[in-house]
Length: 85
Image (cartoon, rainbow, N blue to C red; front, side):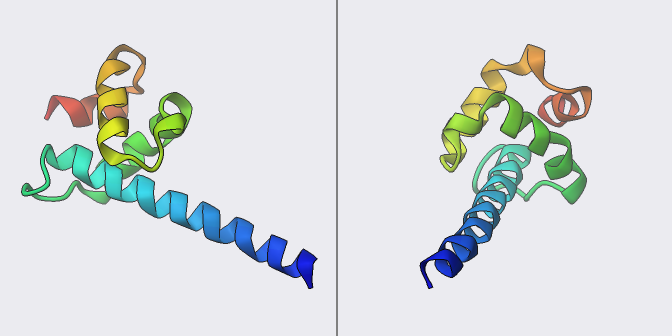
């Protein structure tokens, strides 16, 4: 029974992390909590950069946004375009 529980926890953690990153990217693309959410394309553009450059900041959305801004010169062209909007 212990092994089943261990296996079922991993997908939940990944799912939670993915949802957190999606939320963060929506906030990032919007610029503020009261603005419109980012498009799915904008979220897809920055997700790899979040994992590559700012994984240690997950799940703190503000910290991830700040990290991506600090790493602007290292962002992929697609994610850099999100910040230029």
